[in-house]
Length: 279
Ligand SMILES: [Fe+2]
Image (tube, rainbow, N blue to C red; front, side, top):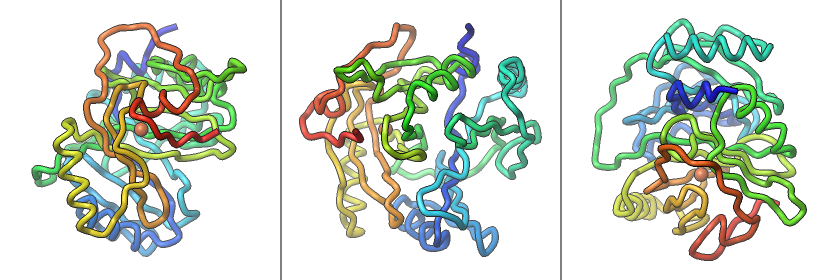
């Protein structure tokens, strides 16, 4: 079994989320995450900043419309396509103004739409608030099914797992490049998005972001803290639809190591104490 996704150095390029009011949520990200907003139609808004792109489509609040993973060449994308076809996963050609024509989408066992493509060059003015979109975390009733799909069928590497006293996997972190995870999944009663995260790199920048969003009247939902798996510093806050946004720093970079199993307890999720357990 080959880690096709890991070997292709795939990264989270953008996500699309449904909202009952895409204009309102686009305004939220424009004001609070310093992103430019663009009205594509009455039912679709795009927000973009340096290395971060979000799409909001008219629909059900908090529902993932798609997660688009990018790779740097057509050659790498072709390897992923071949692997997907060899696993007999249905491929649908995918059209996006942000990706080359060779893009395609598949559906995971929870019916989340996952896109793979080669991103076209996007220009965005940089500022000191560096915060590239870095990972997406899902919720699923059956994490094992998610592992079978993303690890066994696609070739994401497992970085770490969290296991409860009954031996049930309650969280799994998936690696698609040197970063500890670009995708994760929590066991939950729900299916869909848990949160999405921006990797700001340095602790000092989390401070600056928190100062910025607090001046805009927002309140942290969780943190600051440090996750066990990934060893990253974090804060969480919510957008106007209740989508959870993470700002992260110091995420572990992995050269090559076997995954670790962590206990399902508060300290695993936050080495500094208080946690937000999904189950
Ligand atoms: Fe996260």
